[in-house]
Image (cartoon, rainbow, N blue to C red; front, side, top):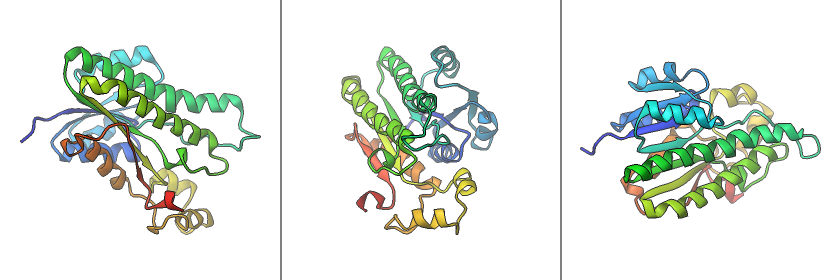
Length: 240
């Protein structure tokens, strides 16, 4: 049996974060969920730990990493999805909020965790949560999609610079995922839901377990020669 790894998952209290945590826990890893709220409650069923963390606060990240100890796998899942607007309407302050969380927060987490990996002289893995929206635009979602295009670029940047330290960096890029939050905004059977599903050749939105499986794979030894990629989990939507 391989040794248990410590896996730190940001945005761990949400539907996708919990599913990722469950998948790693089932594989025998030690899971730490981090979020602004609800991380401890989400971690209990997994036998893991929950910590409160604002990924845009560098001081808070450093303190959290001191508390958690050595991290073997970082999953940058936290992101702001709820702020949308068309190009002519989106307030500039809202775009900065999106970029602060989705890009700057992902950068800070990657930088601070990777520094500690390098200092320990041990290999590690980073998996970012991106989106196919970074490659396929949807009207009204350009701020979020621009941030995810930046996450893809950040993934490649980190991968090429950290490879010499034995740290692999990849991303998972889902299409729409059937989370409770999405179901509330776009209930199954609604015109908006049906219109989006019609764009997916596979005929359904991704389940949270689909996303989790891709994250676990990219963090596993089976993906040992994969770095700098962004793996779509979209049922073929990018083909349309």
